[in-house]
Image 1 (cartoon, one colour):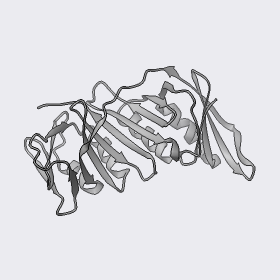
Image 2 (spheres, one colour):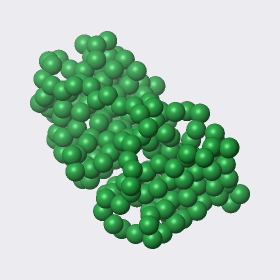
Image 3 (cartoon, rainbow, N blue to C red):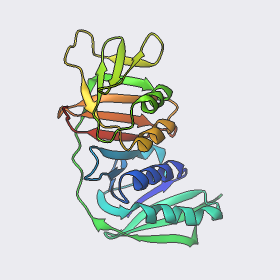
Image 4 (cartoon, rainbow, N blue to C red):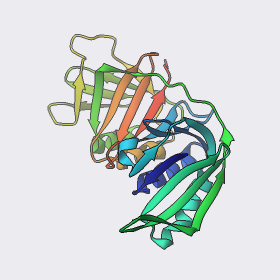
Length: 257
């Protein structure tokens, strides 16, 4: 039986809150032998957002066969919130049927976790398909300290659907719209760029809307926000969390002004 046990549910709660509030109330959950991913998208938005938890961040992890399902994020969050007053130590996710996910909240004992059957929830699932996402080009990337990325978001004009041009060089990175340009430099410790020496075709475009979604992402990390080009000429934004082996991946298609 496929089975996962998680000790810290805060990263999951944060991700499902962001996705359901700003992207979509229904997401695709992909469980594989290496970890699991929540994939959220919306036809009105120009990116696909994912939250990934590696198996190494789980107390127990046994997924012998992949599961790809659609699930209501408010229902998933609601089950965890309903169990929170009981002060559980771990949450187990299991699949006893293809169309059902079971959440079991447990208390630790010397002999191992004991399920609190008063706080066990069965969530209905819908079948889904894997989301094919491009791979990053690891030879070139830009990292921006989280607080400076938050500054960029605060200073850029709040205009929906405006393409933000990101232009890295070997010593700085520019975030620009038609009316505004913000420059972060390596010298001031605001960014770090790799692979952009003597490279001329460096600019790429992203849409940083909904603005509150991206501002919230900048608060989820104390480290850096990473930007990569992808193998389909798009771009990828990576936001690691304070939890090891977990992070957000925002995939942008190739966009031109």
